[in-house]
Length: 120
Image (cartoon, rainbow, N blue to C red; front, side):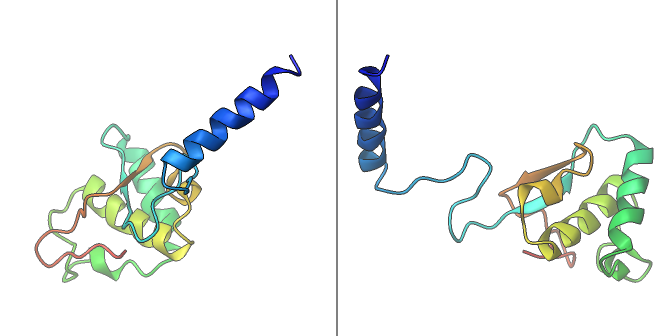
């Protein structure tokens, strides 16, 4: 078994070389890549409410209040996605900051719409 390590090490070095010399963690994003946090579509209403309450204790949630740019559509999933993203951005954009008990997911497509601009 000790003879297989040099082969494995050579193979990993080969992969590193053909990848352009840069490796990223699986849950990381490419340098400069924009990433947003949104609510998982299958999330229960209660979990969405819990996420909104939790995030709004930490971030400014005026965007989802009446008169705010993200008030419409007035759905739990929309409001939760907006504030979950605010929380994710504020806390450092680590994948674990978008977990929300497995009710969040990261997206590389900008979820902004109309006047509702998701922070990035």
